[in-house]
Image (cartoon, rainbow over the protein chains, first blue to last red):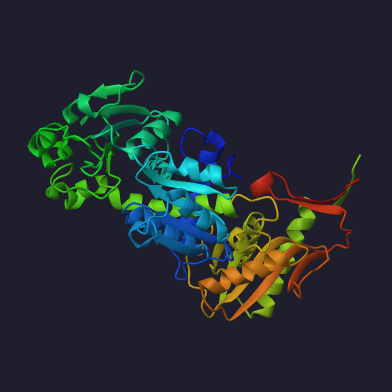
Length: 306
Length: 178
């Protein structure tokens, strides 16, 4: 029912696809609240979780989503694989496809791997993150979380804060948020910005947006992906881009704080903010994002495979 | 031109639903242990109307939920995909007499799926089926306990139920496809 067989990026999603995924996610979210959290919808389908890169939440989120729909899911992670024995990635992909699975979910440290996989096969492929390129299911679950919090998308002011250059989450979220008519500002130092950057508003300090934004989207500092050391010190990062109690208190009423996880406590967000209690705690929707993730991934698996 | 026959008018429908409401109360000896589950989409307003009748006749409130059976269909991947609607059963069905409500009973496959779904929510004492129209052509051993109208049809005809809550008008028509 989606316009393409695979979900590889945000750009090829039609507005109708996005609407369909969001509207179905509510129904799937309800299943996770039942006593028996399983429906027979995808019985007999085999889903391959192909993870060449460490991941806890995305991999388990897909696994739970598939299991709640009664699909069989096989997990593959790189350290256990024959890649260690010297098999090339193309041969690994061919081997998996020869086992006649119905859908492949792929995460890989190199940009473009999901597209390559998609070209090798007729079965659907879901990109669960490829290098610095795209992470479409993260963007969709973020959009769904926002829509649930605000009941609308158009005109909302989103500030995406942090290391934009290395972030597939940021690339996907900014593309999707703009597509849905949101007002997006990137808050990032110049060295974290790609070269082709003219259409989007850029600020360099979180204080420039903190009082005005509806959504404060904190990116993870991606130490593992940074090939050079761009930022002089963690102290300086915190000073310009970190969220502490003082800044949290200055955010306007009804606004929310998001993060794709895992959070580097003490860098993007302080311990105090992560563990805040009382009224301000309602602003932190990071756990809701994880809950939304299961519902969104169930909806996507159903719309692609069902 | 497709041929159209009117089967139930607005006032017919009101009488039929009243009669079914009385039958349910009679057979279950009152509203005490009843819960209603309407099947999306048009079973939901039908269930609500029966519940409103029971409240009027007996002064008792009974729970009503809604169920979407998309996830339990046996033709996933073979037919056009439906948009999943909301399921909302926010009460315990364990030990209850569950009254399942739908607009048209045809092959019985929807009811089969609904029974599977209901049993995932708990173990009811019984499941009873209400349909506004029974048009025959069963493919599974399923029957309705309360029927608004038995309507012999051919497979080339289609039965269209319209309800005020969904369609703005109450009517049942049979349309003969060419």
